[in-house]
Length: 160
Image (cartoon, rainbow, N blue to C red; front, top):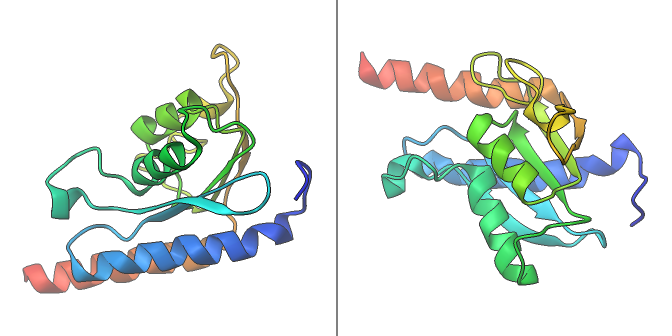
C-alpha cells in the first residue's frame, strides 16, 4: 500500500471498524469501532467502546485501538498508520491521535455534539499544533448514522 491511495480503499477497513462496533451490542456502550492499519495495509490495532463495561471514561474505541497498535509496533509513534473509526473522534481521542503521530484519519459519521475533527472543533488540522492529520470524514456516513440512531432508539425504549 502506498501513502497515496483512493477513498475506495477505505471500504474494507471501515467494514472492520463496523465489525468492532458490533461488539458493543452485548453492553450499554455506544457502538463505536476503530482499527489502526499500518502502511502495508495490515490491521495492527482494534477497539470498540468499553466505557460501560470497564467503568473507564477513557475506554473509547480509538484509544483502545491506538493502545493495541502501539503494543504491536513497540512504540507510541504510529507513523505511517491510518486510524479508521465509525464516528468522528472527540477531543480526547483527537488529542491521542495527534500525540500518536497518526498521519491519516478516516471516519464514517460526523458527530455534531462532541466531534473534534471538524464538527465542533478541528483539533487534528489546527496549524498551531506541531502535527496535522489528513482527515477523510463522512465515508459511508448514512451507515454510521443509522448505527447510532438504532442504538439510541433501543436505549430510549429500554428506559421507558
